[in-house]
Amino acid sequence: MKRKALAILLNVSLLCVILAGCAQPKKAESLPVLKIFSQPESFDFFYRDLFEAAFPELPIEVVFTENKNYFTEDNPNEVLKKAIEQTSPDLIFFTGEPLYRELAEEGKLVDLSIWLNKRDGLSTEAMHPGILERLRSNEAGQLYGLAPVFASSLLYYNQDIFDSFGIDPPGDQMSWEELLQLAMRFKSAQAAEEGIVGFHQRNIRQPLDLINHIAETEEISAFDIRQSTMTLDTPRWREVLESVVAAFQREAFWVQMAPVDELEENLYMGPEGISTADLFGQGKAAMTIASYGAYKKAKFRTLTHASPVNSSDRNRSNMLIGMFPILSIAANSQHAAQAREVMQYLNGDHAAKVAAAMPEEQTFYPIANNKIYAAYKKDPIVNKLFELMPAKAPANYSKGLGWDFYQPYNDLMNREITKVIANEQTLDEALTTIESEGNLLLKQFGD
Image (tube, rainbow, N blue to C red; front, top):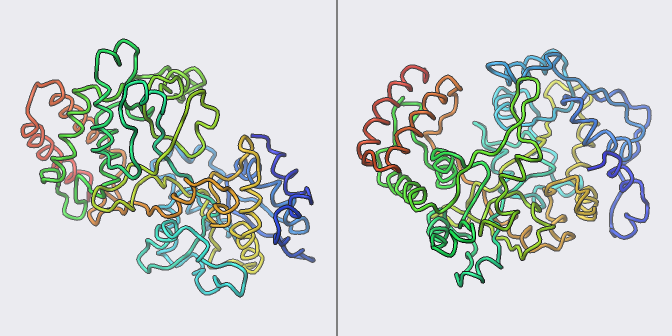
């Protein structure tokens, strides 16, 4: 992705002629400096050129925490929160929902619903209803931020592999259980000889990885943080765990550890690791889950579906995976009018049309949070994504637990379920151990 590509496209007047109806933002005259809270390198890479092209006369100052290693702290959001208090920005670029929700509930963000209407040129009617639902998931149920873009994952499948094996391809809006059952059909001598697996996903390496994916989609939690109690021993959880055990035992997918590189004591997956881990891209996996647009250049017939979905509500899924950034106006902003104009442009029709018209290899927005984008993109799967609602966090969601809890809990889950997969114990025995040891962990770290 070239940093200058966006500015070039935004400055080409022919683009606005092609995209009938685009309106340039108002020019600013003698405006005060708009203070923006954002990670500087990220802002420069993704937004600097856009601001210079769309708001050439608007002076801006990008502020952030001085702690360059804030993400290694025990509570990175607390570091960012203090930095916001110290720098007093007008416009905040949140990179995650927790800090956005915390500041919203503390009354430190402007309620945007008072100016979102058609008369002012920006209405929630054009936005993804599921994104708005997540942005309103605070105690007051109000809208304190807007997400210009969102990322979504899809179920990809290799039509050539399904044809070769004479297996019907996946249908739309399948549940995880249905997907895994389909993947198990590739457990055959022919598949083994050709090195084909039914399903492969790079971030599923242990049983708990798959368990978490399914739990998030099915809107269930393994514990109730309010009661400091494990909630695994239920009929629904048993169904999930039985599906996971069966999928691993029948080798419905291949679990592998790809090569990793080391940079300044941090592990990351480099080009070799990414290539090795991508069995679907190599034509060796029938199905995978990946972000929208991931396999545009595949050398085989690749089709997509909006799956997997919640088995009880086929219109909900955890495939709407991210909103970045979430834009909010600080309640104590001295220049709220200018901040509002910026937000209106970034979330408006013109920016969505520009994003839809950009070449695939230079796409700046994953998916613009505006139905105008879907209309101009002319990709049926994008329309489908605008109809899909996000999975809801369960009432007993594990909000507030830290890594000091999750590290031993994750080890516990993987250890006990792995024993079940290896036929070293029954699921009942595993649940007894997990419930007992899990309750002790919750009492220790859940207060």
